[in-house]
Length: 232
Image (cartoon, rainbow, N blue to C red; front, side, top):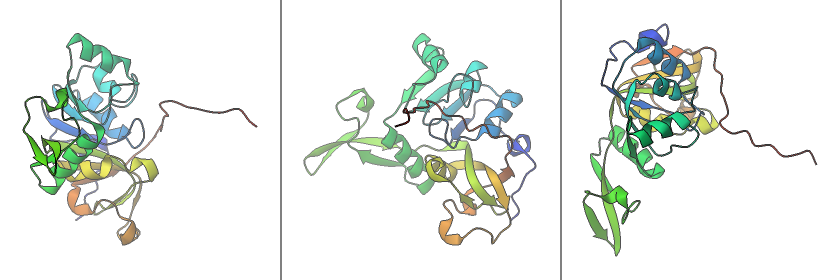
């Protein structure tokens, strides 16, 4: 039951070239910073990364784009990362852009064991090209398949030795559904606590979905775009 490992490098043992990864976070909020840095050190190549976006040029998944470790990005948003855009437009990076809600549901479906579902998002656009469509109650829907990964890398506010996780505010974005959809789920946490310290009613991800957990360090918690207004 004790799923604690020493650090991110130990947590990523068994992660090799050409694997598929889910990486939690929304923009730069709730991203597994330690795990991403460990991936850079590890030097694995040919990765397929499923993530809402790819960070910024010098932070988050942008670091893996700089080192050309990512072969394909499955995302819903390209903005804020000039290198992501450059590699996509030049054909260096294979990119599958998905409506954000569809991306979230495909990850959730993967964790729930639902191989496919119908959604109205994308019908009549390039998103639906080559996919089955069907009418329900007078409205057209597109068949979308689940997403699953060899490794899911998530970041939580608190977690215990059993792998139970609590996310804080906006960091509770793609992390919970991705934690369910990885063959091996690695959780890094800001606060590692003993079993029983977390209120069972506040646990977002039960430990059954987590295989490895470690105490994260040195979080930068950057902000993509800081918007301020003058004092009244």
